[in-house]
Length: 49
Image (cartoon, rainbow, N blue to C red):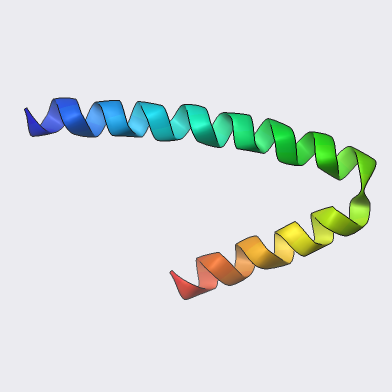
């Protein structure tokens, strides 16, 4: 039961992350400055975690 819930959550998170990556990459192509800000924010978030 727990494995099924975990697999569903991981699949949902993976699809959300995939869409987010595509959105971020498309924004990166348009605005390099935003990519720098997003990269800094992501590294900061990873550093906190």
